[in-house]
Length: 116
Image 1 (cartoon, rainbow, N blue to C red):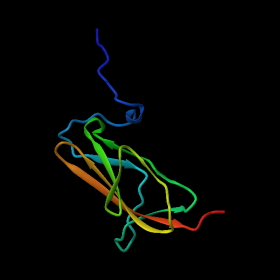
Image 2: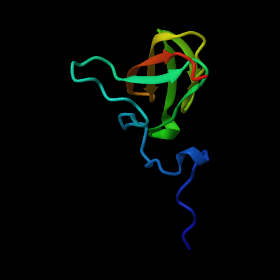
Image 3: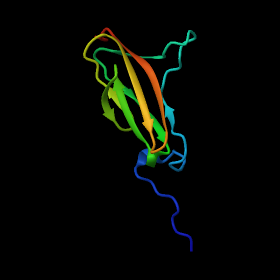
Image 4: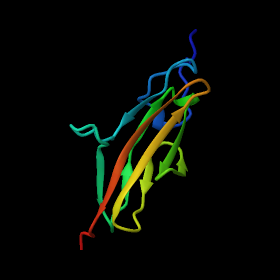
């Protein structure tokens, strides 16, 4: 009799492929493409609305995601909610590490005038 051969640490991992710690980490989900001139892509959000960035990464059981805003660590985990406090442009960086490798994504968060 065969038992369950699949395990999951959380419901966030349901669609993630099962990989080992020897795999290079990959980031999937919402992320703006770089612009034609090579500059960073942009998220945009009004001052009165938090920006929710949803991503997944694999191999999920071996990865840790670290989020930075303008070079300062602000969060560890899957996904990030940026709550703007002032208008302007801010650099967001996600670094995903396994015991052996790391990868990253960068973008600009453009906070614009409130919607009201």
